[in-house]
Length: 183
Image (cartoon, rainbow, N blue to C red; front, side, top):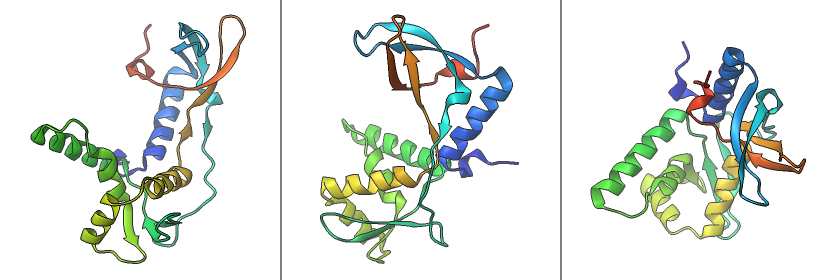
């Protein structure tokens, strides 16, 4: 009875990890590159070693968060997006890119606009959109950083060991074989 599109992306990721480990076990074989040489090697990952990101900042009674912008000194109120909202924004951005023959997608900006509920308690969408379009990079970075800080998720950082015993951390990337491992 769970609608995946209604979940936050991090909650969806946690469910996917749970389903994978309960269906195929915790071992997952991946290709990873030695950061010193760039040479790829195969490594077995214990998925049970992945940790859930600790979120210490909770939303207000409406599910919103705030951040003060360092340059413009405005208070931005934002919400976290569901997986479904994110997918819809991505599809719209790609459609705009293709329709207008643009070189770059507007996904990042469109996503930021969807997160923001108010700026100094002003909720007018036209105002918010114009504000974001003219926002200094440091302010945009501050909002995105705060969104990441308050978003629940699985920490995909993993300690790998190269053939010669060298240890390094890298983000685990999963492929189609995550749910369809080779026999």
